[in-house]
Length: 131
Image 1: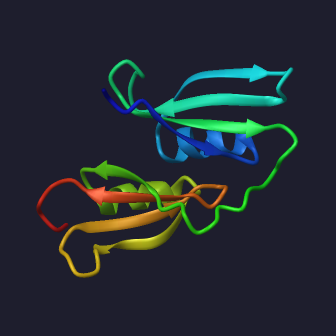
Image 2: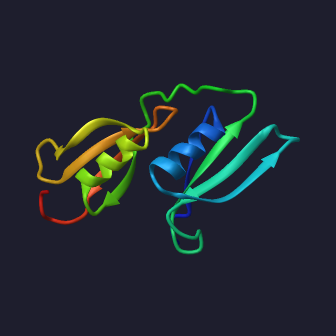
């Protein structure tokens, strides 16, 4: 078995696609509208679905906002240089909600950015060095 994708419901598909592709640098892998069901699916990621886990963005045409509730945590992305990554995300219009720094009670360097629907994206410094 392997993990294929994580699905997030989004209120504005075009806005979400812009965030994931232009701000986070993912590629739109595929997109399809389902008029009979009044929804669209778009898959984004850093590599082909055959060997990478991706994100499925689901847009239900008649819903423009979701209550995220208290159960959602975050999607995590590993980065080589967390400071440069955060600088680039901010320069492209992303909102850094936690600046890079060590996690509480640990030494792993993390940061957070929110997507247009309020989903949290955690950035994790991959190397063991603290920048």
